[in-house]
Each structure stands twice: as structure tokens, then as C-alpha cells.
Image (cartoon, rainbow, N blue to C red; front, side, top):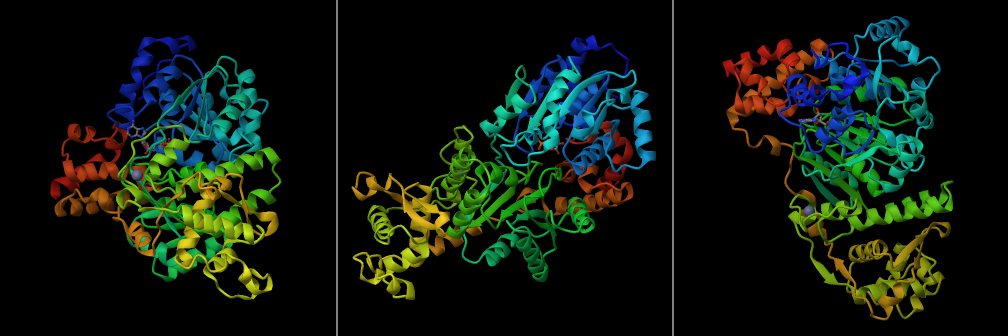
Length: 619
Ligand code: ADP
Ligand code: ZN
């Protein structure tokens, strides 16, 4: 079934046929008409026996870069993966394609593990998924008998870096792979674009000779929307109304908030479940499984839920709290829309989040150098939150890419933000910070600007300052927006060792002296509401379908669910939504027409293709 079933010697890696075989394998096994982006380059490079480091954003199709060579190469490909759930998910998908793949993990039954090992030794497997600790154990190579290891893939390779998120100590051992398996090509893959992490990966994994493949980090099918928080729950509810009947993730910072939000959503009639690291393991596994199997579940989670979500039809990712960095935000939102269909990223945030995040950085036990970089990362994120321009452009600029001025698919492009000359307002704001001795948070400074007589303004004599009441022309809401933007622009900072007091930065002098003019975005409640609403995208992917096509789509979906239950796999493993949409609109009836649809490979067609053509014929 695979491209090379003959027992070829290892030097056959350089056989021309093997280099031409990938496209054929892609079409026959996966049923995809063509490679995407730089997949073909990576695969050719690997098949020629070289090492590679692959940096593609989520959803660009990294897995194929090692799975397909695994099918073409003579021996077996070892895939190192950080999570059992991730390994099992990929193995399940490969098996559905008719690929001989298995995984080895510590909690497998002895019987199961023995069966896998005997298949391995008999040369019956093309891919074997293992955990990082196992691959470097003495005696690991003995498991393979005479079967050559032709490729080692290190998935989620950013786990080797203590610098980025998701550091895994066991990944550090993978540096030894080069010596343990000399001459075996290695491919490391991640969706983390941060240059610091990248350098760390190369060093730790000894990939100095590897070619680096970077694809554009743009995810054009994701709509970005960031709103200031006023009532997070009702904002979330309004957002979710646009996603009725589809699956998504809602991220919260704390475990408690995860549980409370999930419970509250359930009470509002939304099918929701919780996920965080502190849960009962049984319930946690149950909820994760429900997310894979069900097509209309809202999973409320901490960032503990992330890696290893292969579900391609996650239609939205919402953040109720500010993520730790732009890298984190991009990776989390990137979990939406792997299938390429329209999806949405939504976030609410406010001043409090900034204070909280800065406190987390300051109170953490990282070195000063790391803290400094974390602050820089946070401010890059704030820059995107507070931009009056295109969000996508701002995000991509952070990853070193230039994008058109307007993407047409973010809140600020769809409802352009008005800007205003905030120079005078900024001087007042900065003066109020200065006159109150840089010892207070935004709430109190705003009280002073508005001339509000409170216990604190009186106690500190701030009601007698010249700045008291000089800002009555703006509302509390408008001042909050000014302060957030001054923070994002770097004119002030928050000092957490002093309970979130605002401090002036040296650059503030330029504002005082009127050397720099400050252009601010106008955040009226009305404008925020308008940006927040946008167009619902949940059904946008299917709006091109006629009523009849939609009816057929639903019938095909029901069949997919029945097959998925029978086989005990997730519905998307049977066929992804994109394939079902193509069935409903193109209506293939013959084997040839079916195989021409993207996502229909030989095995899937043989197993259940006719069940779908029958439904199409009857429609
Ligand atoms: P990543 O690991 O980069 O996040 P995946 O490997 O999970 O991405 O791929 C995302 C989705 O795209 C999967 O459903 C995969 O089957 C699909 N895919 C990958 N390569 C292609 C291709 N060449 N054509 C069509 N779909 C593809
Ligand atoms: Zn845009």
C-alpha cells in the first residue's frame, strides 16, 4: 500500500523514484491533490537524507512533513511526541488512512505493548510514536530487530526550550539522538516562531546542520477581534451566539474561573465543559474526549489545554484574560480553523489584566534577564491590543513578516477605529501620575482627573492639586482607554512591587515638552459594541451552500457520526468538514469522482466511500 514496500537498503534513500513518490503517496493515501506551502520542499529535503527544522504555524500541515516520508522510506520512522493524547490521536488518523502506525507508552497493557513490539520487529510498521524519555533509553534500538530506523521526527520540539512555554525536562535528553543514531535524518517541528526559542532548539537538539523551513505565519481564515472588557460574561455570551452549533475553546487564567465560567455557560443553555490541570483525572480525560467527539461543545480551559488538540474544526477561540505573550496568544488562537474554514479569535481585556500579568512576571522566579524579555513580550501583545490599525498586520510584524496595510478580516479593518489627537489628554494624564507622586494605580489617578471627592483623594490631599478635576471633558471609560494606550505606547509602566502604581517612563518627557504628539484610538462604548458584533462566521463557511446542499450536508454529517461511533474514532477522523462540504456541493457519485475530492484516499473510499455516494445519489 505504501510507496516503497520492497525491502530496500538505506542508500535507496537517494533513489530518484523515492523522491518522486511523495506526490503520488499524498494523492493515494491522503487523497489531497497537492502539497501545501513548503511541505514539498521539506519532504524532498528529508528524503535526501538531511536534517530539518520546520517552523509552520498551527494548521499548515506539519505532521505530513514526517508522516509522508515515513511512508516512502524503507524502514520505520520514530516520532517523538510530548503527549500520549497527541500520539494516540495521530495514530488513529493514520490508521484511518490505512497507514501502519502504532504508539508505545508506559500505561499501555502488557498485551498491547507486546503486540506493537512484535509488529515493529516484523517490519510491519511504518511509524512508531514514542515519548521522549523512552527513545533515549538504553536498549530502545533493540526493539527494532533488523528493521532500520530511517527517520526520527521530534514533534512540538519547542518543549526542549526552557525559554518558551511547555518546557519538558525529558526533551533535553533528545540532544543525544544525534550520537545515538548517527546518520539517521532528524526532523524537528514546532509552531513557535520566537527567535530565542528557535536558537535554543537548534542548540539543544544539535541541529546546527539542519535546514530551517519557515512558512508564513499568517492564518488568513481566522478573524481577530479584541474588545475592552466591560462585562466579560455578557460579551462572551454575545460572541457565542454567533457560533451556535460549533465547537470552540474559551481560555481563562485561573482554574476557578474556568469552572465558574463553564458552569455559568451551562446555565445559559450552552453546552460547555471545563478543563484544567487540577481536575480529577477521570473527569478531565472525559471532557477532553467529549471535545474530540462532539461537534458543538464549548470547552472552557486554562492553557493546560492546548498541545495535542488535533481537532480541525475548532471554530472559535476566546480569551477572557490576557495571555502571557503574543506568541502564546497566537498559538492559542491558532488552534481555531486548522481545516482552513472561517474561524474566529476573540479576546476581552482591561487595565486589570495588564497589572495582573506584570505582577505575575515580577513575582515569578525567573532571572532578571528573562523577566526583562517577558515584559517586552507583554508590551508587544499590548501593542496589538491597542492598535488602531490592522491587527493581523501588527501580529505578523511581530513575527518579522510584512503584511498589507489592511487584511479585511479583523475587527479594526471591518470597523475602522477613529483616532484623535490625544496629546493634551496625555499631558494631563501623565501630569496627574506625576503630581500624585507615582504611587497610585489608574483608578485613583482617574478619580483625581475627574475631580471626584473620595476618601483617598481627601486623605492624600489630592483634591488640592492643580490637576484635580482638569479632565472632566472625558468619561471614566475614555480615561481608562487613554491610560491603557499610554501603557502600550510605553510612556508609563506599572510597578507591581508597589501595588500596581503607575510610573512615568523617560519617554514621557517628550510628551510633556510637546515634542511628540500622541495619536490615540477612540474607544467609545458604541464603537466597541460594533466591533464586537461583526459578522458571525460560524455558518459563513456553509453560506455558499444552497438550502438543498445544506440538507445533504446534514445527512452526510449524520452518516459520519454513525461511522465514527461504530469505529470508535472522532468524526473528523472519518472525513473532515471540508470533505463533507465538497460532497454536498460537488455531489460525486462514482469511485473516480469520489477519489477526486480532497480528503478521500484509497483506504477511506474502500472502507466507507459507498455509504456516502449512496446518500448523495438518494438526495
Ligand atoms: P499542524 O501540525 O501544522 O498544526 P496538521 O498536520 O494537523 O497541522 O494539519 C492540519 C490539517 O491540514 C490536517 O487536517 C491535515 O490533514 C490537513 N493537511 C495537511 N496537508 C495538507 C495538504 N497538502 N492538503 C490538504 N490538507 C492538508
Ligand atoms: Zn486587519
